[in-house]
Image (cartoon, rainbow, N blue to C red):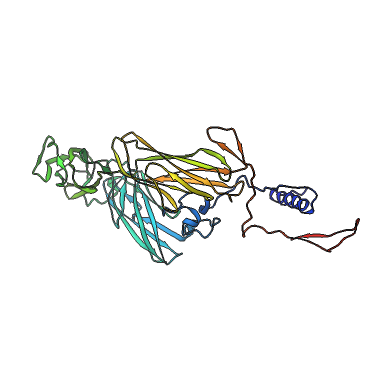
Length: 469
């Protein structure tokens, strides 16, 4: 038995209903709707390419609402990452080289994100990279057509990493990704040219003023012989040492442990605590450790305002279904889970297709394309509730999904409302029906139908042949 596809059955049913309607036999209201429609990036209410613009026509990367991508497609950008080695030992340093090239436009700006392996400390990120917790980010990297660009990161394997561990680094950009895998091998698998391995870290990527930082130096004897050496910590003038640890000396710049004995393969930890005074906003603290001829460093940024990467956000609408002409109130809840006051927070929200801006609260503003809140303060462990109101346009098609989204600090959330003949609130499920609704005129891009007859006059009992094009 031959199987007829659901889509074909739908087309046949639609054609039959339309023929009856045009023949004057039966009045028919035909609404064809795909209940599981997939939205393109240019009509999904989300800033997919992170350029601050939402969907068509606001996003210049969108040709129409049916355009699949807000920018170029995922095959336009090619990535690779390598540290140039297959094996490494605990305590050793490596340099990751990221190569990126695009073959679609004359010039294009992209964001590149390197996910830091859990067994690695990032020493520095070149080319304007920003270390943010568990990843390194480069924003607005300009790529010329078919010209490869290099980004480099200096890293060090933690001295406590167990041999046999696989270190996997992953880089992503414009829906493309690449990985590099390096195996940690035992110390005696190498011809030892460096007798010591060392790392230093305060465990923080960002820190507020008037707080304390505790640094941990991990030093290991990589040889099979007992060795004695000096352990040093170079402390910058931007922070203050709170106390000199036992067995160490301090000259106002260097913290020194003299004549430290290491047994073969032995690892030791040295800790000290510093205080971050209140100075200017956003400055780096660069601290270095030296063990013999081995060196390592730690970079922490002091941020007296809003610390990136800590807020979370949710978006909701007061209607799950809305009629043309209805008002939809969107509510954004932004939470600050930290013990620090968040200042200068920026929140943005999109206007759904077939939506008209009406109002906004809490000092927000509408720039004709997007709703913005700037320089928002959020108390420690507190939250802010922001709302904005849109009106469903009178030409909104029945069955259309109105998608809105909001984002802050890289966190996004979205909500959908269906255009219908009656409205349903998310809190009150009693429907309100649309009265006097006139279906909007089909746009020029819709399917056009024409009915013609094979004669201009006919006698009772005669035949007329209709042709529908």
